[in-house]
Length: 478
Image (cartoon, rainbow, N blue to C red; front, side, top):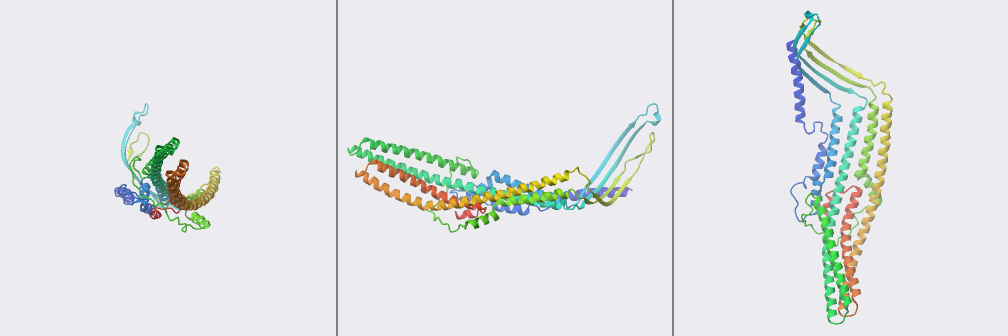
């Protein structure tokens, strides 16, 4: 008997130590649920997370820093890992559950019988109770399979949500980056316009002193200079706003100065890389994260219907137990306890059959089927929204490309017109009104040229994001 007891305890402790060792050995992911997921995400942002901000800052470096510091990206990644762990939960259902119980008990019982002192007893006992049990579900008619399918679909949906957040971060950072570059260029253009207004004022003052122009022309020139100064101050404030937003995007203080790599003043405006509208829509249906996420959520809802139905079916399990108990046996009132040893061993099959659940199963299935209809509607909505975004982005890029040429020609023409107007005004051939009008036209043309270049670069990325193909590698060409 003693040898059996020792054997039971050794087996129990051995099982406990075995599973503790396995848990520590595979502490990261014993069921290998997120191995590829982690590697894929680490390959995206590992390079940009090292080091600090290097100036001048390129667009791709800004994007890498933004991916490392964006809190929404971190939250989306945490949801991915949560879903990956749920796959582990679903896979663990295919494995047996083993539990061990080891008790060492000190029992003290006092019994007092009125008017019968011979029946009164003070009993003390010390005993052991050890057990080792196993339960292994062999057949459940689809419960575990449906749960695993649902977990995999939800992981896919979370991965696509994470991909969508990555693309949103890339686009928002690019918008602030190009906004900052445009702000810098606008400040330079505003300062040039202010200098031209100062030159116009000097010309008007000289004509006034020479007695060939009234004082009203000098006052008009002063007013134009004040307006140019106002525009320059506003441009500086707008540039600081964009620069602060970009600094926050990359995880630094908004008042920290930045130096960016300038964008070309006259990009080529090539549209040859743009596919047909039909092909763009086909690519979007294949690549866009919101559509892929909606499809995965629909698959998860369909798997949930199978899961709810399967939960109402029988379950066949293998059960086994090995137990030992040394609790003393009581002979009866007033009698002393007798030492005893109880041993229990069994192995067998257990069939659990749900017979009646108050029609709850019926309504749970109907509820799950309604969720499928809801997710199907969400998928159709995502497809429609993506199609709208692709169409708008394509037309925005076409417009931005056409505006590149128009804005460049307008600026060059305005520069020539201003030089001619200033020369004519010095000679007294024309009045100051014409010169100030041309001066204002040039200021507007400079701003339009700057905006058209920034809009064209951003429109390219917006189209890629609307299709779902925006990634950090394509930014190396920007």
